[in-house]
Image (cartoon, rainbow, N blue to C red; front, side, top):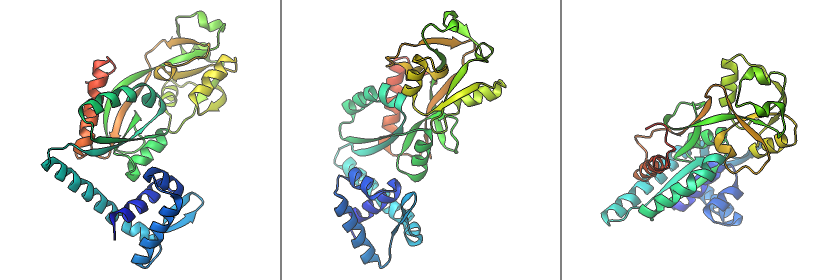
Length: 296
């Protein structure tokens, strides 16, 4: 049995879709389907079945999955050892990230990383907080950029305090103030951010016993900015999300310093691969060089 067949099976289970696995592996859908059929014939039983949530492993497939993943992991370790013997530095870093980090940090971090480690590949998956934690759980990514604390138990590395700001439409009566508190907005119609386990704001509201007049719950940051611009309500968003904003809005600091804490989460930062450790070190170096690292 070839490692290629194991890799195809693992990708399908991880992504929950043959078409997504084909895209990730740069194969045709028919090639992926043929590979799985061949593997099932060799083993003598089905490995996959369809459900409402997508393609999932059968009970036998679920039983074999950890063994197959261990084989693939050991094969990666073998390749790295061979490369080390030959004086090369190779590997793959699989990262989960959300929009603010992907657009504002990672281009600069990637450029610095490839300058010193040109033979290490980086795979990036963009998602919301829930998706990133699920990818860490399933092994799809080596680590993820997340908002701390996480909903599951991981090893974490805090990086940045991203300050929260009030977002108001232009001309709003409160826009003249230099600072606002929750009492100031008690009667305002509020647009509540709702993406993944986005609970940074929710924790603050519960801690202060605040009940806002929630008119909308919106998952997309750009949509919130547009709605505020049109006068449909006010909101509170992290400062990083506003970096490339083109909407005409007013931003005002809260009277206390509230923020979301951005960090890195993984099952084990100590036991991650050398390539992953190099990327995390590069991330901290790049943030520090740009005065963005709040946790040394």
